[in-house]
Structures are given as C-alpha cells and as structure tokens.
Length: 331
Image (cartoon, rainbow, N blue to C red; front, side, top):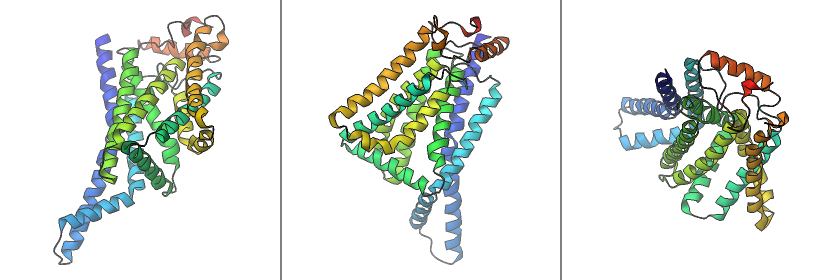
C-alpha cells in the first residue's frame, strides 16, 4: 500500500509540473505556427515570391506585440491544468502546504519577512553590475511593462504569484509528502528553481538573443523557494507563501526609499528576513506549553477534524514540527 501511495504521489507531482509548464510552451508555438501559415498564404496568394526569412521575422514581431494575450492564454490553461490534476488526486487540502488556516501571530512576521526578502534581493542586484544582472533587470522590467500595457496587470501581480505558490508550495510537496516530508520540500525548491531558469532562458533568447539572465533567475528562485517552502512547512499552510509572494511583487515601489538608508539598508533588510524567520521556526515549539503559540492556533479544532479525515483515508499525516504537539491529540 505504501509503495502504491509513493508511486501515485510521484506521478501526480510530475503531472502537476507538466500541467504548469506545457501551456507556456505549446500555446506560443501554436499561435506562431498559425500566424506563419496565414502570413505565408496571404503573400503567396498575391502572386509575390515568398521570402521565408521575412515571414519568420514578421511572425516573431507579431508574437512579441501580442505577448500579453499569449501569456494570458497560457496562464489560464496552466491554472485549469493544475486544478484538474489536484482534483483527480482526491487528496483533501490538508497537510504540507495545504489550504490550512494558520496562527494570526504569523501575519506580521511574514509581512516583515517578505519586505526584507524584496529589499535584500533588490539591494544585492543594485550592488552587482554584471551583464547577467543587467539583462535580468531589463527583462523583468520589459515583462512588467508589457503586462501593464495589456490593461490586465492583475495577471502578473496576483494570478502569477498565486499559481506559482499553489503549484510549488502546495500541490507538488503535498504529493511528495507521501514519499517523505524532506523529499517534498527539496523537490519543490529544485523544481521551482529549474522552471524559473528555463523560463528566463527561453524568454531571454526570444527577446534579446541571450541567456545570461537565466542564472540570476535560478539563484533568486532558489533563495525564495527555500525560505517560502520552509515557512509553508512550518505553518502547515500555503496561504503565508501566497501573501509573501504578492507582497514581494508589490513592494518594488518601496525599494528606493529603503535604499536611502545607505550602508545600513542591506544589513537591516537581511535582519528583516532572519529575525521573523527565526520566530516562525521557534514560536510553534512554545506551543507545547502555551497553546497560543501553536502553528494552527486558534484553528486547532479545524485541523483536528481534517486530520481525522486524512486518517480515515489512510493518507500520511503531517506535523508542523517534531516538537509540536500532534493536532489530533490537542483540544
């Protein structure tokens, strides 16, 4: 039985990853193929000698112009695909990275930590003048500008962070928890980093003919992935990671003012990450003696019901930490 659950967990994790990635590959390719065929037919029907390099250049220019539409289509299909895999798995939304209610004490901690992550990343990039960093910042700026021009910036600032967190901090580690909790955490971080690397590599080749930005994207994704996944594991909920990702995306306007602190800015930004993170790790341990510090306080009864449901389905149960009292044994 355990072997079957392990195999199914790995299979559903792979299906989730495929459902997330595939639309961002086949949708642009399909649009460009249709545009190429229509352009070629239009020129040839007019009796003109068709220069295929000219057609390819026109199609490429059109694809860049209509990038927001292509991206939106890919994003919606990816959302549907990930949701379908999640529903097919018949796993309740509980356990590592589940849609669980978490201790409100964590709200100010995750807000400060998210701002610290944004400031630390931005200040570090500001201090580095390598071509890869310059290209990375240029590509991210162009991407944001193109989405703003589409009059649908919510796709970039809301839907994208939510889809990323649901995929890489909720569904994939939730499936791989059937193998082992550490496997779920590690694979989710590696998968997220590699996907971001591949995305920036492909986007860089398309827009600038360079892949220099991909390594920068890999490093940033790895750092964010580790921190967000550990917060998700510790608080037993994907909601904190969702909120943190949205704060990180939206807090770019605060970076210049924070940078005005001069030499104190980067150390302070790092402290804003480290201290709340330490509190998130330590506070649930105190919950063994003081219930108010539990990872799921005041939603212990809710988690108790959900754990009972998992037990009835003979699925693995997740603990916030070894030091935390089992939910099903508490009030």
